[in-house]
Image 1 (spheres, rainbow, N blue to C red):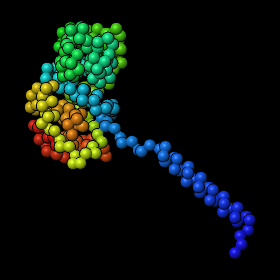
Image 2 (image 1 turned 180 degrees about the vertical axis):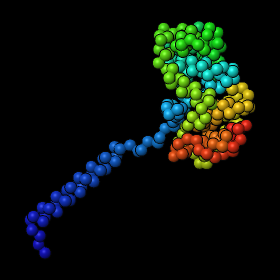
Image 3 (image 1 turned 180 degrees about the horizontal axis):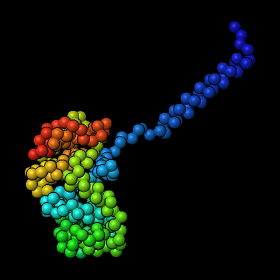
Image 4 (image 1 turned 90 degrees about the vertical axis):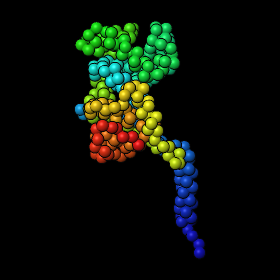
Length: 270
């Protein structure tokens, strides 16, 4: 059986196109990276406003609120601390800074704040900040930037003011005044079996900042619950329950859901 020249030409073109397509697809797939695994993330939601945080920022914010509660300081003190930390370090525990400044509040060993190792401990650094803040006359009433500047003595003290709005949102959430405001998610690990939740270790670390972990009111309960959610990835926590609501490490659930024990006397970790 003989084929016409036109049929043969078409067949050749089809084969060439098929080969070219296959080669092109091979190189495209070779260059295309695998889909990235989503990073851990946290959000704070208060009165319709939402702030994104990464886990380190959320953990530091939770620690600041816990230290303030231990010292029985008002929410205004927490707002000032957040406004300061957002300007100084963006709520990160930085091992570097201007001259010898380090840590969340960029405190300096040469200025008597403490040793570098101490200043890299957010609990210690926060206690030092609050110890200085309470000595500022009328710190609850004066502008946030003025109170922060009185503690920090920064060259650009005016810059603290720009963070007051976000600082108020963070304070409302992490002090426990607004329930269910802190939500986090972290990607599951690849280890099999999955790491066991280190609940006792988490409670010990909380006690370093908060002191007693006893709950005598709902606000304190939600402070502890928020601290626990913020530290969930660090201690492999999969669920936090309080007052009839539960947070689970499930991105599809989008935060707190009804469920869990209804007690308000204890935050359950698992």
